[in-house]
Image 1 (cartoon, rainbow, N blue to C red):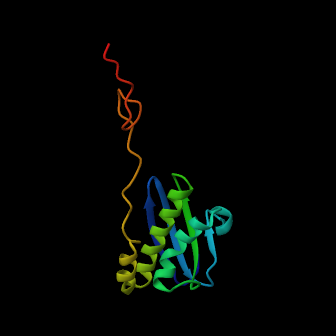
Image 2 (cartoon, rainbow, N blue to C red):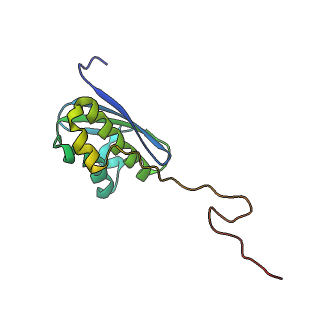
Image 3 (spheres, rainbow, N blue to C red):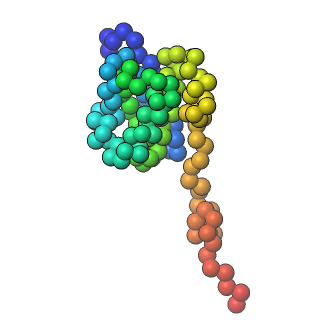
Length: 131
């Protein structure tokens, strides 16, 4: 790649990992070599991914390339959002207060709780029988 400037970062959410590359451009977004609108079918997910740009008023200034793997579509959207926020920090560290205020830099620690042995699920038990 001979492009002059690019900003790279990694975002994580649940079991998803997204590698994000920002390049100065017109605002074109590509996720896993597919069109952004085609990859994230719902408008809610697309809005979630764009949130860091709205918070920092940098919409349309970068071409975004995301390589996401693991988890499902919601986890990948959250990972992409986290990665974009981190990449914006590499671009301009002065954006930290705005990104921090929006909660975009915090890695969401919530994940599925593991199933326990002798139980039906993580919390649910088998039916108790006294006799």
